[in-house]
Structure formats: C-alpha cells, structure tokens
Length: 625
Ligand SMILES: *[C@@H]1O[C@H](CO)[C@@H](O)[C@H](O)[C@H]1NC(C)=O
Ligand SMILES: *[C@@H]1O[C@H](CO)[C@@H](O)[C@H](O)[C@H]1NC(C)=O
Image 1 (spheres, rainbow, N blue to C red):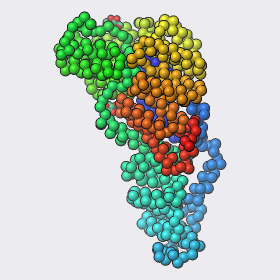
Image 2: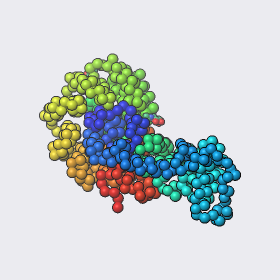
Image 3: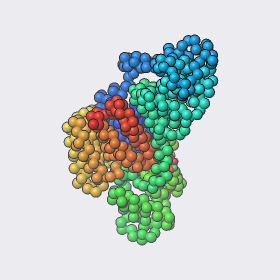
Image 4: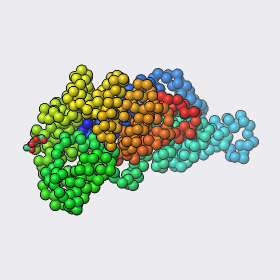
C-alpha cells in the first residue's frame, strides 16, 4: 500500500454519521469529504491519499467552522430573541396549559356551554375584536382538551379558533393533536397551513418533517428538517440528528437502486495500480515467462495474457487482465498455478467491489497453496474493508507462520497499524520490512510519513532526503515529500516537488500516469493563494488523464463547494457515487450529494435563508448572485 498522510484515519470506514459528531458539522463534513473518507478507504485499499485534503480541513477550521453556529453559548442575544418567539408560540406538546397567553381560568373551567359557538357563517357577524377574543378562548380550551388527551375535542376547538382567526399556532396545535392520533396526512395538512402563515415556524417544520418521515417520504422530511436546522442555526440537536439520519436513509435507498443496476467495474487505473504496486514487484510465476508459449484457448494462455495485460497499467488493459483471469479458471488445467490464478481473480473481484466472491477466491487460493503468503495479505485487506480488524490481524499471523521473512507482510501489517493510529507499531513494521528488503520504495516513504505523524519532523524529513538520494527519479518520493511540505505550509517547496513528480510521471509512463501529484498541486495552490481557477484546471487535467479518478472528482466537488458553486458541486458528488467501489462508499458519496441537493432546494424554497446557508456550507466564496 502506498502512503497516507491524511488526517488520522479511523477503522470504521464511514464515520460520517457517527451520532457523536457535533450536529452542525454536516456541512463541514461535506467540505472535508475528500480528505476524511477517502483517506480511510484508500489506505484500506492500498492507495495513496493526499495530505492536502487535511490542509483544506485546517483551512476551514480557521475561517469557517465558527460561522456554522456550533458555539451556541456565544449568541446569547439571539437566544433571548428566540425565547421570546417561543413564548409567543407555545408548543402544545410541551406545556399547553402553562403558556403565558393561556388564561388560567380555562385550565380549570373549560365548560363547553360558556364557549362561543362559531362556524363559517356566524363568524362573519362578529367584529374583529370579538373574533380575536373568541379565538383566544377557543384555543385555550383546545389546549386544555389537549392536556387531558381529549384530542377529538381539541381538534374541534382549534378548528373553531381557526375560523375566528387563522393563526399558525392554532394550526400547529391542531397538528399536534393529529400527531397524537398518528394521522400523518392531517399533520402535514395543518403544519403546511401553519408554515404558509409563518415560514420560519420551526416547530411546525419539525412536526411536518416527522410526519413525512412516518410516511416514508424521506426527501420531504429531509428538506423540512434541513430548513428547520438552518432557521434555528443548528441549535436543536434532535433536528440536526434527524438530518443525518434522513440523509443516510435517502442515500441508502438511492444507493441500493444504483447498486442493483450497476455493472461491476474496475475502479480507476490510478487506484488499481496503487493497489497492485503495494506488493513487491516479482518476476512472472514459473511457466508464464515470455519464452513460454501457450495458446490463448488454454488456461495457461489466459494466465499469461492476464499477466502481460496487468503490466500495461491502463484502464483497458486492467479490464483485459480481469477477463483473462476469469477465463483461465474456466478453462482450467493450470497445474501449479491454480492457487495463483484464484489469487488474481480474487484480487480483481475485490477491486471491483465484489467482496464476497473475492474472499471466497482467496480462501480457495490459500487452501490450494498455503505457502503463498500474498494471499493472506490480500485477504487481510478484504477483511479490513469489511471492518473485520481481528480477521485482518489473524491473516497476518498466518502469513508469518508460513514465511516470517516476507517483507510484504510487515509492510501491510504496518498499514493496518497506521490506519488504527498505532504509529510506533507501524514504524517498527516498516523498519522490519526495510531490513528484509531495502529496495521497496513505499516502505521508506510510509516510514517517513509515520515519523511525521509521530511528531518526529526532523527524522521524517531526513528519511525523505535519503529516499531522494537512494531512489532518484521515482515520482512517488517527490509527491509524498511534497505532501509533508504542504502540511507544514511550505507552499513554494511543496509545489516544486509536485512539479518534479508530474514531470517524472510524464516521462516514465505517459499513458496511465499517476495523477495524484497534479491533484496535490491543485490543493496547494488553493490553500496558498486561494487560486480556485488554477486548482480547478489542474483537477480537470487529472480527469482528462484518468477520467475515473475518484480523488480528482472528490477534490473538484470540494473546490466548487468552497466557492459556493453548489449546483456544479452536486454533479461531482453524483459522479463520485457512480465511481464508488463498495456499497458503503456509494451511500457515503450519495449522502453528500443529497445534502448538497437539499441545500439547493432550501435556497429555492426559502430564499431568505440563502445567505445564512451560505455561511454554513463552507462558503468561503461569494454567495451566488
Ligand atoms: C520467504 O519470503 C522471502 C521473500 O519473499 C523469500 O525470499 C523466501 O524464499 C521465502 N521463504 C520461503 C521458505 O518460502
Ligand atoms: C459486500 O457485498 C454485498 C453484496 O454485494 C453488499 O451487500 C455489502 O454491502 C458489501 N459489503 C461491503 C462492506 O461493501
């Protein structure tokens, strides 16, 4: 696996919806998605992630998060205002009889015959003053009836109050009665009327959202809860949690639909190459040398085709390799290479996100040839992606029992430690891997990154300088060195390193070049100079070279969102969902897409909230005109 310099990743691949997260942070997390989630997913899969993602997160922390109303204690004057508003609009659910505008008498003496009798006809004969008085008395009686859980009576009384005076509170209170009776359609009707009269009526919005949720109209519920959160500056934890919950529900439903129709495809060549090169390069297995001639219609011929195609490192050649390994096992007669064939088919299945059959193939491979240590290592990354940390640890144990001097095992176990934030254990394993084989560049790079994470900046920089000396011309060294420099805000130097990496990539392999240095440079320019135009251009360039590169797509989404270009950002979030490998990743990407879409809808429906939203959505840029 290649280095990961992002924020300290956690094992749970998708921490987005952890309930412990601060409620206001849904927007923050949209903005830092590329860094936080990709970091974990990519480390598991063995691919590099840009440190710069984390840099964006820091940048946001400085200039933006504080605007999201996370610190509610600060805004005490706002709170007072809100309190007044609440007194004006008693929540029937909470204190129907204690509210200030409920006459005390009615609480004890709600005698029916003393109450004014009104209907649509008689009300026309009343003066404005009479209507107001009647409405107040009817509402008070309604509150009392509600308090004694006589909902039909309360509904009737609120209905009469509404005839006297259409008031959002009366509608909302009647909605509370329907709520108690679980008549969700009526709840929606009345809260809609209340909101029409006062479109910042948070209680009515929440009540309607709840009814929508009960009716499984999740998108509508999400929209209402989102609006309510924004009006309320995210001070109501329950609504903020509801937003998270509904985002997940909506995304899960859409994700299932996408998954059902989605042809399983390989991820971008950037991803595949990084995964494959996280194992030491080896000569072709005995029997597959160029000199060995096998016909294409034999299993061995297909294995040979798979091997050579894999070496070409392009999207097409990887697809060819995957097909060849499939066919090889169909044709059979593979002799000693059967276990290797299962290993390779499982590898490509894993890359395609077919977690179950991939695991089966690796199990078969291990059964056939327990000494093939690479199979245990690959099974470990599969276990890890299924959040089975213990399974992964056991795989490494078993691999070591086969061959305790295989450097690949230590390198990959180090990656596991790294993901878990166990940096000293990780460093020890990288060291062992280097002692066993000092020629594998990624052990050195990742050791440098780990030292950096442990706070040993000087040793880390020394490790990288040594790498440059010992591995001249390897672009990855410059790329990751640049990431560390960027993390230290040494922008000029970082960009120099990224440029060198780009040049080397270009001359090494013009086709299928690694686009990560381009994306890193984009993020560096964004952080350093807020040069969005140039940053976008670099991402676009990366996407021309590798159109399926999900890091590039995620970075574009992030850059656009930073500029308040929400509509454009949405298309990239949706694209990211399409490019995702696993159900978890799809749901994750979709939840960001849904959050972004909902934000757009709120802006449309509540234009007066647009400016407040802009302040929360990572909007360093100008609000849209
Ligand atoms: C163990 O792995 C190393 C490195 O791959 C290899 O050189 C050695 O031959 C292996 N030993 C056995 C017993 O397979
Ligand atoms: C594993 O694959 C199954 C079937 O395709 C899928 O439902 C499940 O979500 C996958 N698990 C992960 C963690 O991707």
